[in-house]
Length: 85
Image (cartoon, rainbow, N blue to C red; front, side, top):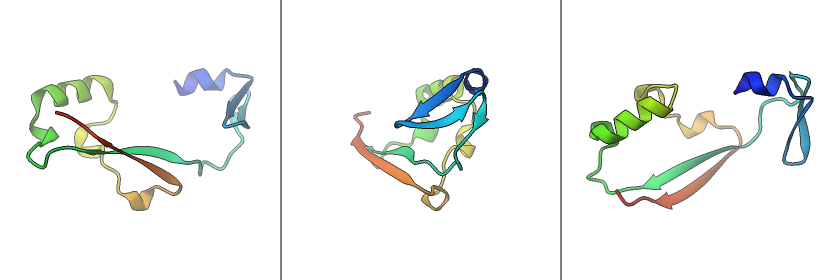
């Protein structure tokens, strides 16, 4: 996906040019959106074989490397939601 952006003449995000001809024009401190899904305390996604299989199929990181503490998110926006599992 990053390779695709390197071929664009301009990439515009939220009305601002963020790259031109593959060169990044921003400092990288844009907002990071993340989800805090409320699920049952009894549910452990690390032990759900269906979840693990889909995670491994669609993500390039492994589950043990996935969690990121909020302290590492400079400008973050949390989206709270409830999940029925």
